[in-house]
Length: 123
Image (cartoon, one colour):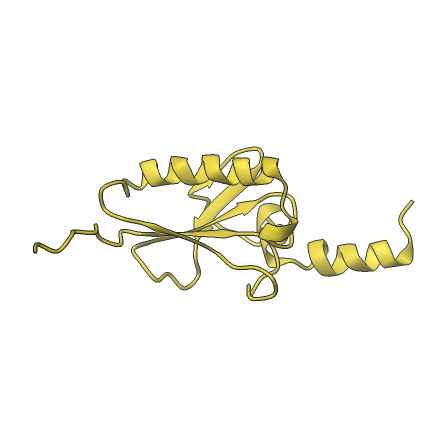
């Protein structure tokens, strides 16, 4: 049975979380990828032509609070999206914020590209 504190925490972290609302389809969003564990969708303010957020369906506050399965699920989705968006050979970055630095306290990875390909300087 949930106590009042548990209900309050649920309401703050899950019920009112914008990413949880997107996962529950309370806020319409087109998914670039979805499976039973994660979703991916375009960032509201993209920094690159491909700027996707990869989000676990279950609420996880940040990377520190994630478990191995969640990280594995996200990794699988990111690899699929790198292939789907043809980012290999064109450059990409992954970014994850945490520890209070993230704007939305729900674990999410930014997949951004193309970023270009490193070319060593000729000496």
